[in-house]
Image 1 (cartoon, rainbow, N blue to C red):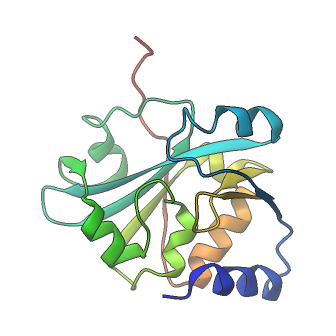
Image 2: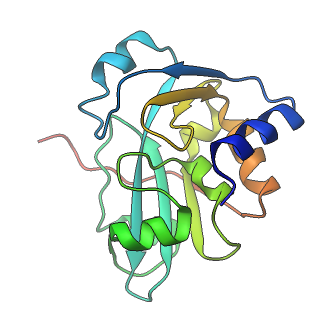
Length: 167
């Protein structure tokens, strides 16, 4: 596991502009509302999923959408999905729930987890994600997140993510 130090080395090595914001630990999108109010850019949430065929998926979407899990498999090319467990998350991406980020793919073996990015996030100039811990947020462009994922040997799926209407 390369961890946050490896992440910072890669950001510097690829001259990726970014800004790190330190803050109290947050575990849910709701808990991060105050942080979101003070940081410009897109904010994210991450779903660690396992499909009916046994494959793992890390899906990163805008924080304010409700993902339609019934329609998601068709959009990303897999079978029915359910949430993965904390033990598999730790084993595969080296993080516990509450700290999940697409940047965790720095720790993932090639082919162990398929990362999915919402198409809108990839196009965003500023995307806020955890830098492998939930006591900070790092802001960088969607294109640079994509570039890092590819550098680490992953082939992200970029898709419009199906959403549920707010109830």
